[in-house]
Image: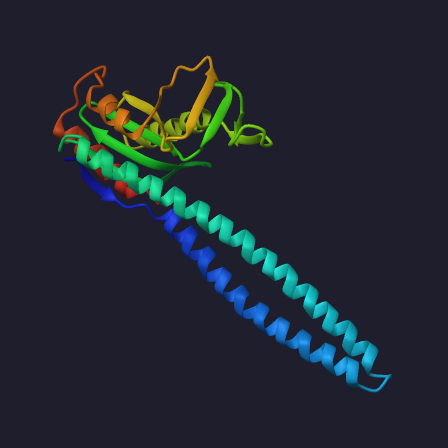
Length: 251
């Protein structure tokens, strides 16, 4: 069983922030609606020289309430998305923990920075077989594109409007470049860093042209990492040095 060194945090923060914001907006909407009702009623009953002004302010309060209500709906959709992403990452963490041998270490949701470049990584697995930088996606439907294109196309259901998605293979490549820069700055010699793209949805199909990076399920990923043959074998002390460096630099 692999050892987990860090937990998922950014999606936790994102989800909790959205929840807090939605609660605040809900309170504001209640005040706005209450105020709108009072102002409209007062405007209808007031003398003619006060009535129009109160009615205008009441209508404006109603518009503000409607706008904030729409914002609450948007926040709820974002919260659901963040919760689904968090659940997906936790599922991947559990499978990797249970499936990989105990010489493997898992760092979840870390951000590394070197110079002006930074990269957030869903999971990093450090083992004598190499460092694996893991990007997880919970996409569903048909995803098509080219490995070198900046954008891929996702169609969730037949007939639905296609959506543009950032190419996760290029994203994974940038993450590895930052990882390499951090290791080099820390005077760690470790050439074997492997990209891993995990599809965490059972309802996803990929049609990616010129693909050199495998798109794996979380179960395939365990087999892939456990069976990887690096360019050279790494000692326990080298593994420890990498972990200590990443734990020090991770944000």
